[in-house]
Structures are given as C-alpha cells and as structure tokens.
Amino acid sequence: MNYRRLLTEEVVLKDQNSLTGTIIESDTAKLKLRKIDESVSVIPWNTIDTVIGKKFKTIWLGTNFGYYKIPYFSVFRNKPITAETPGMQFKVGTALRGSKLFYLQLTIAPAQPYGVTKFGFGYQHYLGQTTYLTKNSFFVGSELNLMNAKYNNGAQTTFEPFTGYERKLNERLRIHFKLQLQFNLANKNNENGVSTTIGLHFMKKNFKKIYTKINTQKTLVRR
Image (cartoon, one colour):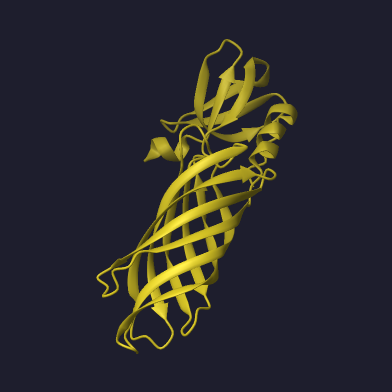
C-alpha cells in the first residue's frame, strides 16, 4: 500500500540514476523527496535532469450523448419492452496512474412509453501505451447499473461492457466515441442492449503545467 501511495514522481538525475517517491517541498536550490520507505532525501537541483510524473491523480467530470437501445421488463405491463431513444449520461470520478478511471454515472433516456434511468459504478482502462494524457488513446471498461423504468416496481440490474477511442482537445479536455453493450442480469427480458455515444471528459488538473513548472521554475504546484 505504501509503495503505490508514495509513487508520485520519478526524479531523474544527470548521472542517469533516478529516485522515486513524492515531492514534499521544492525551491530553487533543492527538493525534498519522500521515498517508498518513508525516508526523506534532499536532492540539489544542480544534480537533477528532470522530474517525471507517475501518479496523475485527479477528479474529473464527463458527459455522453447519443443513441440508446435499452431492453427491460415492464412489471407495470407484465411484458418485455425495448426502448430506443436519444439519451445522455453524466459521470463524476477519479483518475489514477494515467490509465484508470473510476466513476459514478447517471444515464437518462426519455423513452416512450416510459422513460428509463440508470445509476451505477463504472471503470475505464486505457490500452497499451495510451493514457488519459496522450493525444490519441483507446480504452475498454464496464459499468454495473441499477435500471429503473417509470412506473416500474423496483430496479433491474445491468452489466454493460464498452470500448472506444479518445482524443485530446487540450490538457484538460478530451473527446471520445464509445460503443457500449447492455446485458440484463436476472431479468425476464433477455434481449441485449446497445448504445453509441460521443462524450467529453474534463480533468481538474493540468499535469503538463504542473511538471513544466517543477522542471523550469523549481516550484511545486500540486493543487
């Protein structure tokens, strides 16, 4: 646990050796690095080549808009129904290590005859060498949701894997295209659902700015 928690930066020295840990203080003469074993090293800046980020932790917000095909069982009508409608999704979560997104989501589909909502937990992972900082990236993930239709008696559970492509617009804003499937769990409607959406993610932190400032001005701007 300590290893992952304290692996925030890598300080590459001019002799090509490096130290990993978390920078706790920096000025024009030196920086202090809390290492994996909780000890603190004081490193003169004249021995440092560059500082590289490792953790990239931040809060993010997201939204998706597109077409949804949502099968569910209507207790009110006692029959399976498939809603086909435009819809939208709202997400809030945390990003970690450049490759992982964890989030809560709310999907609203104003279908006829009954509107459908989904609320649940999602996980997204970036593939290969791509991350949520690179210009272009590919990802996979899944959601576990509780699905409610208007007038229905109780929530139904869905498992929804997805994949997609993402492109960076700037250091905080990214656009993506996502294909998502819906599998109903313990549901009398066995039809599979699908959605195709376009979305935006906004990252709270600008990591390029943070590490440019550390390397050029020797100033730590963690928040």
